[in-house]
Amino acid sequence: MKYLLASLAVISAIALTTACTQAPAQAQAPAAAAQAAERVIEIKNYMFMEVTVPAGTKVTWINRDEVPHTVIERNKLFHSAALDTDDKFSYVFSKPGTYDYFCSLHPYMVAKVIVTPAKSS
Ligand SMILES: [Cu+2]
Image (cartoon, rainbow, N blue to C red; front, top):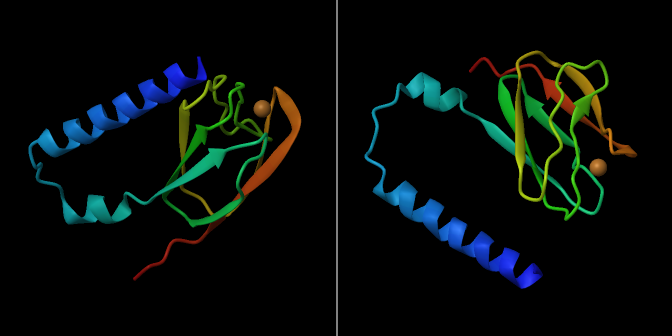
């Protein structure tokens, strides 16, 4: 079963790569491209990664465990569904601050996202 899942992951990775190279080049406003900062947090071994990002960053959690996890901000600012293996959840942090979050399935899994003011360069 593990082998099958690994094979599927490889196949979908290839499919994604192919899809990307075949996608026609799309005109994008430079400003939009500059704001599209994204940070990935992998959930592994029942742990989140703690990150510090500038305001405006889209943070995407990916579950790398073989059990489901959730991503829930302590004040219910965001609340993911149960994420199965390799499922993703994203949230754009527009305001600076410290955001504590946890997994409702494993309440001892706690972490925070620290959002710093966006650079005005
Ligand atoms: Cu969990």
